[in-house]
Image 1 (cartoon, rainbow, N blue to C red):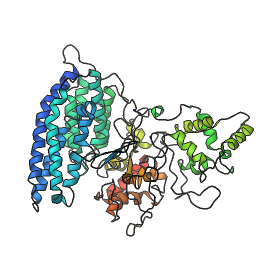
Image 2: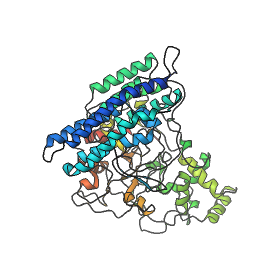
Image 3: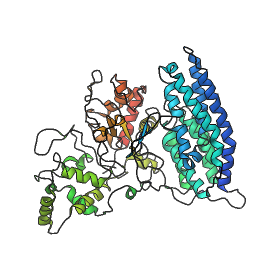
Image 4: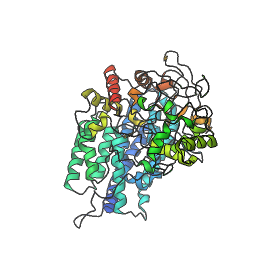
Length: 560
């Protein structure tokens, strides 16, 4: 649910120029306004951090009120920080990391540089731990770092310079965070202050807005956030459709859920565009060593490019493949392919499958000769893999009832499905792993990293007697302890029609998947998962909320 590992990737340019018009002669430059806002808010933020430090110092073993006081002080700090976030996250990401980084080690590949957990999220994790009083020394150390960092913020402005265009970009990125991270509770899942934090962020960027229409939607959005500050019951769908998405449009941006929001050509891979050849080769059995299997054999178009099996069979054998066959829809919107992310792009994935003895067992010279004989033209391996990859990049229809609803057809989703979206993006915390708009592990606002998670998924679906799964996940080829049992977060789109689920196919129904998350993953089931990234705290979903969640999953089913 939180981005604890960094996967380097190509920065996607999501944000367009235009909109957010540069100030005219009656307005100060946006950079000056941003700096003035920073100078005005920073002392308030610093005082709130000092109060948090004092509340942590006052933690008294057995006195539960002192814990509550510290939590309230932390909430105030987080909300105040979001008044500065648009500026720090864009211009000073290193400083932003100190305040708002994930509560676990982050690893930057390929250098395997570890980042110690630090900041408000780590403080939150410690304050909500059942052994909170034993963590007082660690909490005090965190508070010292926060206080010193907050007091040092004015020094960031020394010799600082920026353009109005850069300030606009910082605002655009912050609005994406509001829409995808803040209202989902991504960085405050236990405090559940995301709605109030979103309002604080909106107030901050409103100070830089120029134009009556922008101010109107911003003020209305802030008022809606203020009126619905209860995290679990907040109507996120209404906020997005009535305020946030219109704001994006007025600012000149491609809207979050538009099919053109993410540029699939910006993801790594070849520039091959021969999708017609790729479509033909996708169903071509001559690509397998024994001529019995094509890509479509396991990724069946009629089954939403899955096979419906727990695990498919090995080529030339009745034995089973080690993992469940993943779906291919929206796979182009990732920086890592396969469940363990061992391929960097779709082209590499195609090549690996073709050469896998268990899957296709293709011999290059042999399949090229077969293809030339059948199609009466020469082929090359890069041509074959590139064409297949080009076809895979077309498998992103964005044609579900949810997509139609977002585009303006308010009859496309039932009331229960609308409620399910709000549960998905709120109380169930699905949106903190399955990020909008693809609802996969592609992390906003730059969408230049793919997330991996350790869920503690068992090898069976008997939650009373869960069996340990032996699959090491990403650690099998990147052997570090933080990757033990780590797997890529796939898209939640089309999940209602692509059972079974998880990397091992262990869960037969979406109901089981939801129950698993509701119980807190493997650790919540009582399994020993020392590095689980999913919170082990039960979600406490009601039966109605689970039904609504399932209904929303159905609303993510594409029309193929």
